Length: 145
Image 1 (cartoon, one colour):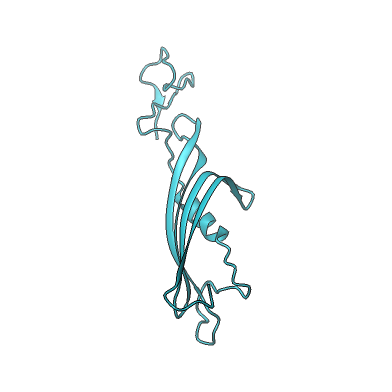
Image 2 (image 1 turned 120 degrees about the vertical axis):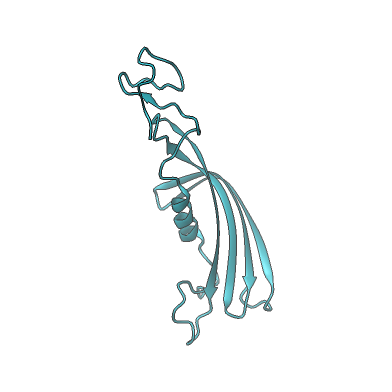
């Protein structure tokens, strides 16, 4: 891609069942579209990814599949004496590793107050019953965040 004319682009599609990034973030059902554009300054990456991660509901404490969706754009600059302030450079071998960018953006996309469903009923504060699955005699006593 580095030796192609300015304005050239390449489209890549990603479909993976499971991807573990840095031994701590396991993504499921990953779909992605990446366009690499050749510019005078370097390679411009436009990326859109979607995936699922196991989340834990803050109300009922049940695990569920949290959908995540990210998009980002990043310029990988060519190394010249004028590009000292770029965060990313095109590697000498021309292979760009998107894992750090996907990882950072996916972690930021995980909600702080994750809910298994918008109307999650939570737990009974008296007996701990998950009020989404059953009721108890302590009606109205539940933990909500």
